[in-house]
Image 1 (cartoon, rainbow, N blue to C red):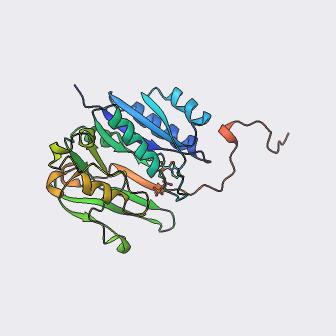
Image 2 (image 1 turned 135 degrees about the vertical axis):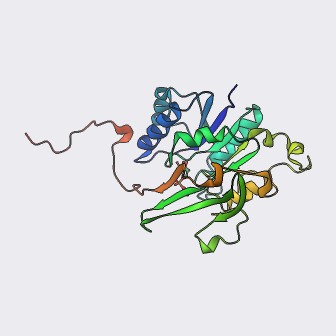
Image 3 (image 1 turned 180 degrees about the vertical axis):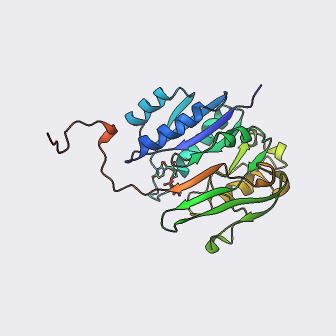
Length: 253
Ligand code: UDP
């Protein structure tokens, strides 16, 4: 039987949310079963998201986490932690992947996830409007062996692993079977780091693998981009709520 893919997506209401979730939902619908999409919102479940999920034809769970009381803007970290707790509590056995709603994912990526036994990582293309160019973040590989990391951000030199949130996936059994990964049971996995921007991924990964030897680089030689992390800043655009057009725009007859 095929391995279950557990795709975790934090989301929130904003102008392009429907565009992002439709696009991701339609990609996920093309991925061979079994796949579970865990979509997490903060504060309350929005009608827009609920309705969209009902229409995708993807098996999903719509979760809500409490509003982050620290007032630190955490860009989905709290929501991803809620999903991790859910996976652990219900012993959902599969490959966990953090897929933000605004990135672009190829079907090949989801196929590759099924090759992961413990932990897999791959290079992600980062596209920033301001920089006007694509850069890479993620592993450099020799076959499936990870031998180094691409990084372009000097300020992030202190990170142990240079991986984007959308550039790794792991077996969920790590969450409840620490012994199996050579870790003492008294050392539970801390969740994603909520404070240090840029260190969330590495802090998490440092807990689930010891070093590059416990990783598989995907695809072979890590020579192909399978997903793109884009920054399309459209926060200030004023689109109608729920994409319902209730009042006419200027009509010319
Ligand atoms: N996100 C969220 N609430 C927020 C900010 C972000 O749920 O207040 C989600 C967002 O929908 C996306 C993920 O967290 O799925 C990452 O957000 P974003 O792309 O803005 O962060 P970046 O990747 O630019 O750091």
